[in-house]
Length: 193
Image (cartoon, rainbow, N blue to C red):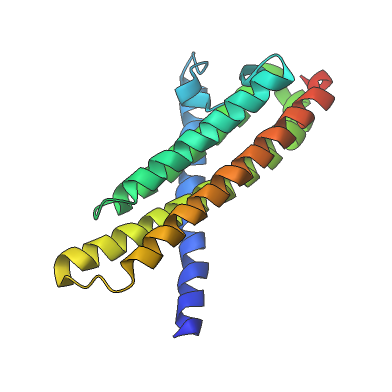
């Protein structure tokens, strides 16, 4: 049984990662055909030119973007029909990464490569891991609720709810660390823009 659970975890991470990659492709296409990608809901503060002008602004914008995503995943996980919303959230997260990376290349050509590699890619990878973990927990919770609706079995639900909350608190703490690292990277490498 444990081996089966491990395979599920491994496969779910890959499947959810594919949703992010699809979002990146859609975001890349969107940025190439759209004139204005300056809205935070579009670039999600992945683009360094829109992340903020001070260390504090970069920290705030990065943290709020990640924390809001995680909070929404938490809330959707309290629904028995959260799966499609979770997948849509990951596509949206990838969309912001695709838009931001393509925008940097559109503005700076090949000269954007160092900025993208240092200022977008590490943050995108870290935020994607947090996003995938949040959505994976959303899907697990949603599935448990669906089974409860169907079968009425609520064994161990208090422990499960407590663990669900703790996992999301950990993801928020990781988001704080990512935001702090992003602030430092933006400050140190701001000359790349």
